[in-house]
Image (cartoon, rainbow, N blue to C red; front, side, top):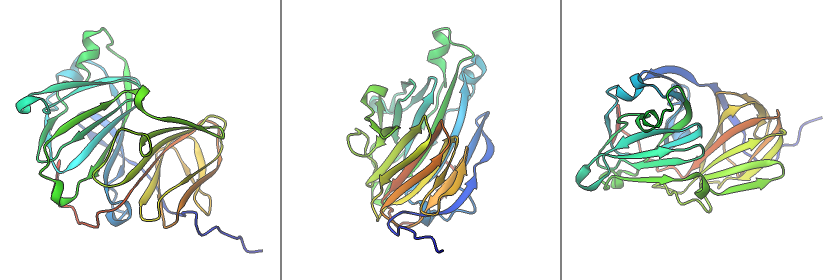
Length: 273
């Protein structure tokens, strides 16, 4: 008997392991960019990194200050806390932000910003040496017309991130309805936890690109219930909804979606023109 597939549901057209690479002395998992995932399928998302940052004097004293331009840089604290510096103060002065568990820092790099000075310095001063922050960093492109925007910083505290309870799922809306964070293009970013496993469904506009990155557990993703597990990315095809089923207890994932620009970014390390 043929399986009837709801054509409105998006299919996981590709599932791939994140690869590991060192970045500023930290080993990161990098699901994006990937040589196997064409940018047109994930536009406007340029890069996704997951990493654990350990708070040590060595880390805080490393020369990690670097420049960015041309995109929104978002850093999400999954667990633990850390702090960082960025040149979004008056006249380009360095200012600091502290990320607690569940908080989100958005840097609009625009025409250019310095970032990542003294990672974890604030925690060291509070005697928290040896603690760790697990974070998710992602870059979201800006339209070419907006790449000269004034740099800015926005720190969203955990209590300001909308949280929804939906049939056993805890959903944190990082970008989307109720969130104070706006990208340069309409977008949707959800952190979804399924403590008891089971299923989850969310509408995703048909004109958005979308993918799922698995933080914990495993589940069947999309119309054909393709299995995806910890540290894997599942790129979604056309449709109007994401369905996740048969999730193991404790499964957690991030849904990232956005309206593509249809522009070809020019990559130059930390600059995206």
